Image 1: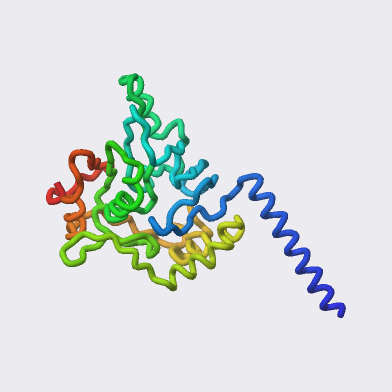
Image 2: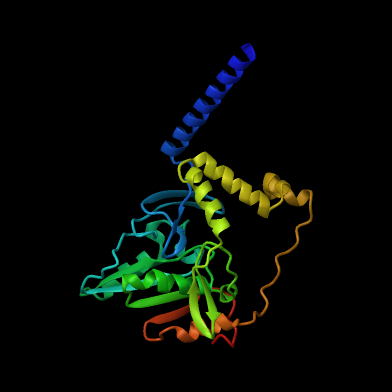
Length: 279
């Protein structure tokens, strides 16, 4: 009985400590809960009305609005006398770690409204970290076009021209019967695991941090995580490979040829020139 009592007291103390730690982390905004949710239209996406805070290569603090993107919550219905620009790309465009006042879309709004006072400009941030051109195209068709943009800007770099389908819970742009389609054929096991674990990570900062650490440990050696800046003292670090010429995949070619040049502009946002065959 004495042992059982000690175990019970330990469990109570542990749960109380975890609860108080969770309360402190959440109220002090030291860390965020999971910022993703699964939706029927876009697969895994950003959560509505969620404040986020990131500490990785920099510091980021902001909010995903009720329409599931960063920035002012402009509704899908576009008012008259508004010129709306949809910004699409990867983390460069999503800009987790850039404050609103410094975001290039917000700066562009101010510059254009000063130049054209009779028009109101809206730059909507539809960037998503890790997106390549196939992800952007699916996002455009499934989500972005519902906001009726007058102009869509694709911000691309060389690696983004090669679809890698990195997230099994995002729609895939593929070729089927020589036609470009967007597939929602998600693996049921992946979806079930995600929905089960998300119950914990969406409601607990501690569980979300543990889950992020678990993923990081899978992707990177534990010693590199622990020693970080002095890791090179124990192991030789291979230089990052140079970006070589890539092969333009058929799906990339079909995507580009399907884009309407009347309202879509492709911007090379990298220091490397895009391949000649892409042009």
